[in-house]
Length: 156
Image (cartoon, rainbow, N blue to C red; front, top):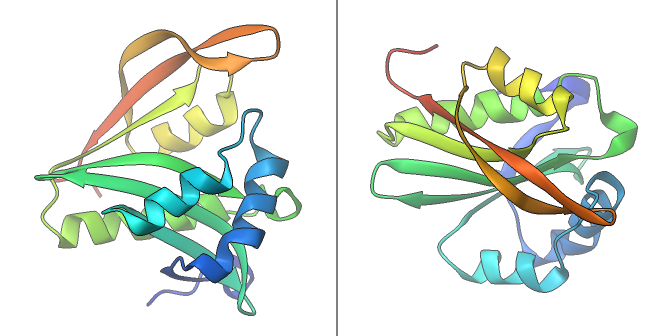
């Protein structure tokens, strides 16, 4: 197990993590998932991970897998810990796990206006491969999703 920024460690999410995960989600997402969304993921066949510092969740990821494809559904870091490399470390850790599980590709969607996240994903080797018009709720309207993918073999 690698240790991340601020001594962070990754582990499987449990229902006991939900209050902290919901607080991170609400503080960091313009249209946060509900507690029910997270509970459904925990009870289903989803990969639910938390990054912890001193045992307290400071970030999380929810992923799904179908055959040899992994899909990043949600990722967030506590706003007080953003811009310290935690999301990069979490994603690099997950990409290593996906490769170890013989996954061939990872997909994600990101808000068209989220330049910081898109830059992070590009740094990891993700490329844009499409758009979904009006995919996200945004204030009084809708916002496009940028579709991105990373082929896991042949990339660092």
